[in-house]
Amino acid sequence: MPIVVALHVAPAHRAPMVPVTSVEAVAGRGLVGDRFFGARHRHVTVQTADDLASAGRRLGRDVPAPRTRRNVTLDHGPLPTAPGARLRLAGLDLEVVRVAAPCRIMDDELGPGGKIALIRRGGVVCRLLDSGVVRLGDVCDLEPPNEDRLF
Image 1 (cartoon, rainbow, N blue to C red):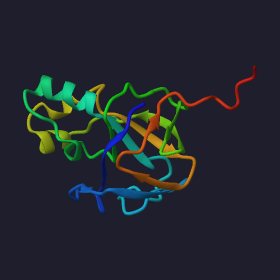
Image 2: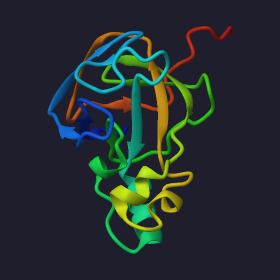
Image 3: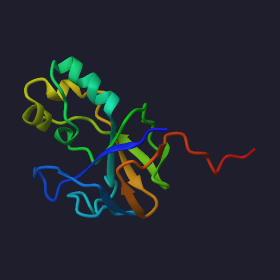
Image 4: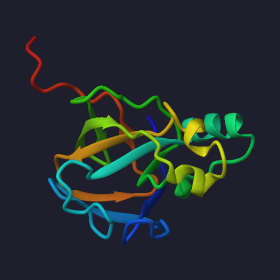
């Protein structure tokens, strides 16, 4: 299973991402200390190091995790991308809201071509369904059991 290799929060819009070793996650609210805390749906963003490496190959240079402005970086994927899909991060249930489409800020962060390099490699935006703490080294289950499924 993938593990958390980087955690970041930004205290305000366009503020630099701050690396943290752990962060409090609040159901229905987001990550404490992050600019999107309290937002309706954008509680946490998740990406993979695999996708960053792929974007870096396309761009011709490294793509450091904090420069993509995502909160959680996993060592590998693939991430579920369908709205409503679930993943379990550090024992907390997350629901995928949408793919995290790169914006023009990525050209500022990564240089020309940054936005294009991250298309289909930008991770996912998730809603937090549980509260707890996420730490570096925590495990992420990308295919948690569907408890609503009838057998």
